[in-house]
Length: 128
Image (cartoon, rainbow, N blue to C red):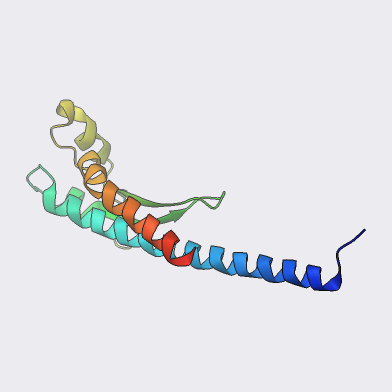
């Protein structure tokens, strides 16, 4: 016993509605990740504990949205550079050397965590 044409139509409508909601939620997630990445980079630039010498590490702090192959979205913040530079190779050492005296990325992630979670929750609540 198969489904009637009306039932198939209803299922198609439900699937289309769910797909539209998913797509809208995904677009909002991308926006949230971009915003948090940018705000996180600015937080890191404003609060890093080292004194700028060349300004290269400061300038290379950047944040943006990343989508992985499995569809997972996140914000990325680090010594990543931008369109005009490649970032600094010693950023890792600022984070781990001297018992983390000059680290800023962990501090930034902790500072942005609650805001990120709330922004994602809000985006999902708006759509679903």
